[in-house]
Amino acid sequence: MEDSIEKKSDHLKEGLLRETEGADTRTQILKEIEAKDFLTFAKKQIEANNLTPEERRSLCGALSEFGVYVDPLSRETEDIALLLKGSCSKVDLTLFRINLKQNIDESRRPINLKIISLLGRTLSAILESIIDGEIQEGNVAAKVLEKKLEPNEDLKIYANNLAKHIALSSSTIYATEVLNLSLATKEVFISKEFPHEVLSLISRGKQLGSKSNALLLLYNLMCTKNLDLERFRGLISTEFNMSNFVPLISSFVYCTVKTYSPEYSWRELNLRVYLRNNLNGLIDFSGKEALLIADSLDQGNIKWIRALVWRKLFEEFMGEIREEALNDFIEELAQIVEYSPHQIVKALRSLTPPHLGEGIIKNALGILAEALSITNSEELSHMVAEVVRNLTFSSSIKDLSGAVSSPQGKENIIKLILKGSTEVVSEVLRLFKLSSSSWWLVLEESPIKELNLNEEIKMKLREKIKDSGENADEILTSLLGDSYS
Image (cartoon, rainbow, N blue to C red):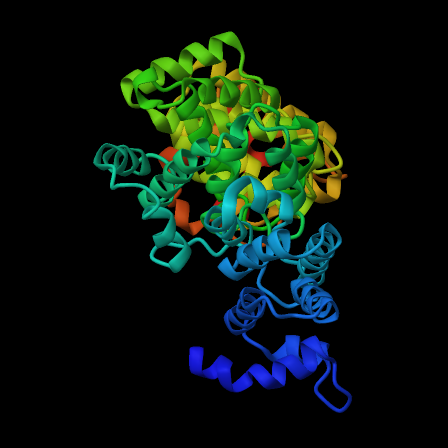
């Protein structure tokens, strides 16, 4: 590089220092030159101490203008700032920073000068990668992050054990905790500026829930003392309308587990206080729920905690989620109903218009049927009946009809009748009848062969419908068509 600079030196002097007529303009040179080459040239000129006042002003001006072209996170950026501070005027240094900001703004990179000053180059680069969703297992940013500290075997064991129960990889959990340790050394968790700046930067990057970046961002933001919860809540609400919100909810599960974990799992106990305050500010666990979470952790029953967190977030944000995203949300609830039927059915009690479209009603009835097939307590049956009643009176006849007329819809109705209490059966039959303006539905011809309804099952259906006070033959003919005789 030294030889290269020597060869270019006269060319650079003509363009940068003397601005000789006919030479390349300063802007042309700065656009094309490598940052290392330019910095080496500038240092040599200053160290030679033979610049005229005009040449020094030109060189300082070129250094300032280079802020438009240099990578803000490069080592050369730091060195240029130091050179300007020691050899040029305050105006030149200020102009360099203004040009750096312009550089960042025009490139729309999710980083800014304040974050760089708080975190330094390496952590800022990692943060930028996280916001852009580029932290993935094995990639450069992840490897840099893991090398920030000495290998922590206890932390790796903790991550491996927890990953078995939460829908997050052990490498994501480990990287998150390493980042947490690294940020703690910068004392940013007590800073007012750090959470404010990160929230601002997220809007310039990709969605918070993409890939593994959800946990890395959410957990470390939740560990800050001065997080603006109202602003953060608005961000979460927006994210729930995105297609990939599952990692986001898994991150809340992780925050909950960490909040109520034993103290020995914490290096910074004050961070636990900040995390608990922020978590309760968003989800608001009751005292009883907090005790149940602690008991579940003692028993290693993290799946129950997952169901609880899904339910609390559903209740908190349901009114702000678009119908399409809400349907996706309910489909995900169906995947975890086995973890705690009570929690998932409780979540469905929050369903209200105008969200109750055909798909949502069908999926909700499927969840209720599955919940009753897992456990059938009096409390659960009462909640199931309440949800069915709410669906009946809060939905349009068109949506109800569409939800129960498909093969899956019919299967849901039959399972609810077979598994439900008298109260549940009454509510299910009311929904079934109100699905049509006539006394019973004229359903599409698609008998439910997959249920293998033998005579014993048909007899049980008949008895349960009859016990509810309805005309069993009429209902079953409407429900099963030609397969009922």
